[in-house]
Length: 430
Image: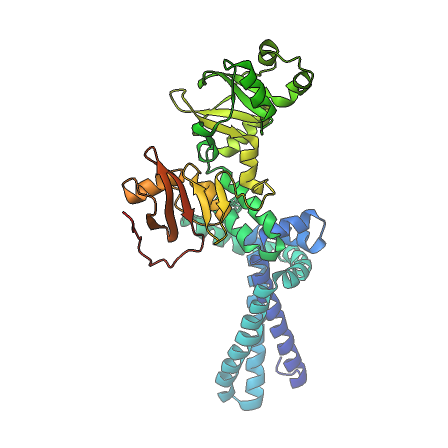
């Protein structure tokens, strides 16, 4: 090597530094690839993605060939730099060459290419896969020997190198992926996907229509009242019961009796013949499970019951779908059941409205780990039944009691413009 021209030695040194930068950048690029995007591109037929995916199936072999190549070119570059230093400056130049070569490799063969690869992994990883694949086949015996020794040491430490890292994403990790997707997913679609993820953590009791708000038909009522209820029905499916909802008969699809109703041929017997048997839902059923149950049973409505069989409320397929896609109503003044926008920007909310629905309609963050309705939330906060005019802060949101009665809060005004986190609860009017 000492007989080679200096120009050739300098050229070889530059080439080796470029090769070192290639190996360093390839390692970072391949290891920082988005695995899910990589699998998508590989399934779509992208040649670079397919080769990269095959290499990443055995990361120990990939790292082995990269480090073999990187160490080889770095050591060879060091030898050439030493020869150049000896020919130019004698033995004193060895230390200078070592220092300069370290600085050059650090900047041009390590930091710069690895930073570029971390910022744009696909630009470096996919082309590099075309080189590393054949190189791995050529150097496989050496890679296998070094890899076997390294894997043996890892096994002594309790690590299994062959175990593929195929851990699935948890629900919270998937939520983070969706939130950080940014402009890649439209905001409305993002909310829908997050709503689907939240279904598993929500039970039917959280979204049901409370027992006191169930609108149905008392089949034992005078026939004129039954007809009037049918004519004024705002829902297509109504529960039919005898005297009270506890004596449920079933559900009636109003459309099935419209023809008889308009032709004045409907009577009590024909009405009962059109009633379908009731469908009951346990109160703790997750929404994901209930959605599948509705599909399997071909139902759209069910009565929520507790462990004793007492009816607590009513849940519909639309209620579950609204948890995903949002409110179906087109009236801007109505923001869900019992929620109305006021001219001053506040919302008049019924005490029996679920806290989850308030949070969704008003886009606020009232606590949901305790009481399920606004009335329960206020009573827990105040520890007494407040008088009208009482104001307070719940989770930083101003709440003013408007109407109480029968030991419950019936109406309250909520301002969605949250105050500072350090604000203290105001209990004026108590």
